[in-house]
Length: 634
Image (tube, rainbow, N blue to C red; front, side):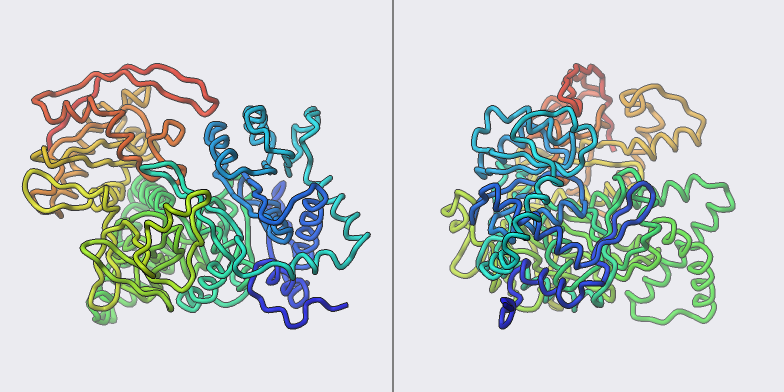
C-alpha cells in the first residue's frame, strides 16, 4: 500500500523519504575513515534512519520524548537525529566538549529518557552523572572502540539498536511510513539551547515549519544549486548546523561531507573542496591568523609575492566598492596574482571551489570579511538568533562589509529605541519549561531581540551588540565593546580581547589574550627564547607588539572610545572555566568578576598586578598559577 501519496513535504522525515524514493542512488554523504572516503547514498541513509527509528520505538520512545546527542559531526549523528524525529522524539544536540556538570544540567532540564554519545569519552561523562540522572533509561554509543569492557546494562551500541530496528522492519514493513505520516509541521523537530552568555541556557523549541521555511528562502539568496557540496563542521548544537546540515542538507538537497578527525580538517577539506562552508566567527578569525602567519613567516621572496597578491586582491574589491573598473594593467596583474598565488592559498585551505561561505553566531569585523574577499573567498555575513532563525543574509555580490545583510523574504525588521525587533511568519514555539519567559520577549507579533542595531536606507542591517553589553563612560554616548573587540581580534597576534568601562570610568581598558601559535612563531623568527605561556605573555617584545596592534585600532576610533590601558593575560580564556561559552562567546560578567583585581589595578596608578589563578584542565583537575602581570598604557 502506498502511504506517501498526497503527503506534503512539511517535515524532515517526509523529505528524507522523498530523497529515498526520488534520489535513492545519489550520493548524500561522505565520511573519511582510515584515510578513505566512504560514500552513502540517500537510499543507504534512509535505511539507517529507518532502523534507528524502529530501534528507538522498541526501546519505548514515545512522541515528544527528548533524546540528548553528544558527539562530533558524523553520518551516525545525523542518522540518529533523523531517526529520533521519525519516531516522534525531540533530539537535543550538545557540544562535544561539554563537561559532566554541563551535561547534568541539560539532562535534568530537558528530562531526557535517552542519551546518545559518540564514544568512550562521552560515555564516561554519562557514567559520571548517571546516578543523579535517574530518568535516563538507555545510553547509546556509535563508536565501539574501547567499549568492549563496559558491562553496564543500560549501555547499548548503535549496531545493536539497528539490529532491533531491522527485526521490527521485517515484522511490519509499513511501520516506518506510518511513523513518517504522523509527523506534522507544527511538531518540535529539535530543542536548541542558547549559549548562556549572561544567564543559564534556555531550551528553544524549534518546529519543522520554521526550519523548512528558512531552507526554502535562503538558498536562492546564496545562489547554490541542488547537489552542492557542503562541509559540515559547525556543531549540531548550533542553530546554523541544525538549519544548514540537518534541514537544508536533505531538503535542498546538499552532499554533506564530514572530516575524519578534528585534527585532519585542513587536509580533508582540501580533498573535498566544497561549494558551501559555514563557520563561527572565531574559526574564520583563526583561519585568517593562520593564512597571514604563514605568509609573513615564509621566505623573503614568497613573503613579497603574498603581499603583492593580497594588495591586488584588496585593489579589486576596493574598485568594486567604489563602483569603478580596473585599468587594463591592474586586470592583468590581478589575474596573475590570483592565478599563481591567491588560487594556491585558496586551494591549500580547501576554498578553491567555494561559492558561498557564511559567518554567523556572533559579531565579526568588516576587516575579516574584506580579507577573505581579497583572497577571492566569497565570505558573507548574516544575522540570526536561536528563537527566530536566520533573519538577514548577504550574498557574494554584496559590498557592505559593515552590515549583516538584508532581511530574508517574509521577514520584517524595525528599530524601537535602539533595539532590533523582528516579525517572522514562523518562529520557535517557546522555551522548554519557560513559556512565560518566551512570551515576555514578544510585543504583539514582534520579537524583541535584545540586540542594538540600525537599518540603513538600502535595507541593510547594522548589528552592534547586546543591549546589556553596551558601555557608557563618564562622558559621551553609549557604544559597543564588540565593535572594538572584533577589530582587535583581527590582529594575527590577538586571540581574545575584552574591553571594559563604565559610567564611573573615564577611559576604556582591555584584557588581551595572545594567539600563542602566531606569537610564538613571531618570537622564533626574531630569535627570542621563552619557556612558558606566562613568560611569553609578559615579555617586553610581545607587549610592544600588542601595544602597536592596539594603537592601529585606536587610530580608527573616536578619541573617547579608545583603549587607554591593557593587560596581556597569563592564560587563554577557557570554556571549561566558564569564561567563554562553547561557541567562544565572551562571558563578560564572569570575566569581569574573575579578573576584577586586574581591572581595578588598571584604573589605579599601578604598573603591574600580582595574580593567583586557579586553572581547570580538560580532565577536571585544578592547579594554582601565580604571576605578575604588567599594565601597559597605550
